[in-house]
Image (tube, rainbow, N blue to C red; front, side, top):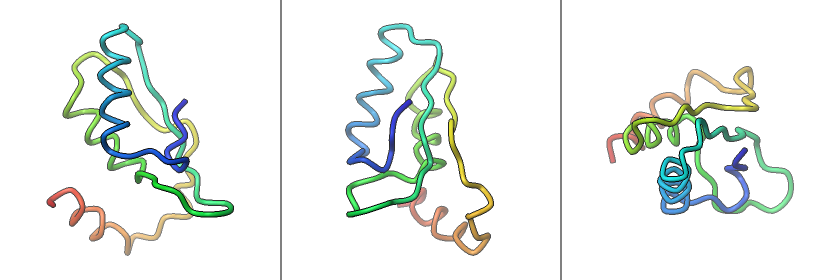
Length: 85
C-alpha cells in the first residue's frame, strides 16, 4: 500500500506504477488519509487513480482506505480543474 499523504509526488507515483507493472505486480493500492501533523507533499487519491488508468495496462488499483463520508460534493469542481490542467 502506498501512503499518498507522506511526500508522494506525481513523478514518484508514475515511477511506482511503472515499476509495479514491470515487475508484474497484480495490483497497487493506496491510502486516502487526511493529514495528521505537518503537511507534506501528497496526491489526491482519486486523481492518482486517473493517472494509474492512463499509464498502466495490467495493474489493478484502488483505495485501501478511503474516508468517502468526509468528502463534500463541493470539492468535485476542484477535482475537475486539476484533471483538466
